[in-house]
Length: 147
DNA sequence: AGTCTGACCTGAT
DNA sequence: GATCAGGCCAGAC
Image (tube, rainbow, N blue to C red; front, side, top):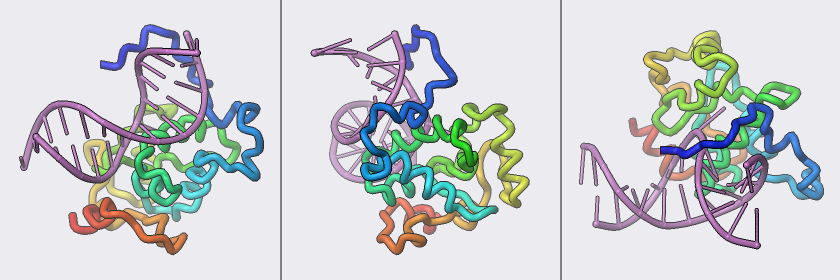
């Protein structure tokens, strides 16, 4: 699996080094968009990377969403990354939190039922960022709703 | 400069 | 129905 022979630095925040991007203000990387969307997530709600990626306009780059979350921990206003889960509603990134249980703790603290690292009634707690932006959601959302 | 990994998703086999 | 492969962007070695 992932061949990671190199040293891993926890402080590898993508957005942390904003020196590379010319002007994130005028040229807001999708990173910023993701953070904004995630911050817009109401309490007691959760969304998926795909939904955010879709809303950000990078459905095919949903992976980057998770990567962007990596820097979320360094964000001043802590981005509610715990409200972001994969399409399965499983706390995939929980392991990346300060504590593997922190994510579940936060979700439960918001009233979300989490069991076995998976959000129960995900279709209910699911929050569509597109709904806030009035943008057409993808089939991913439909599937979730259908489930 | 090239290579690879990364908290994913979708489509096709 | 489950599994495989492809794909996007950005950062680190």
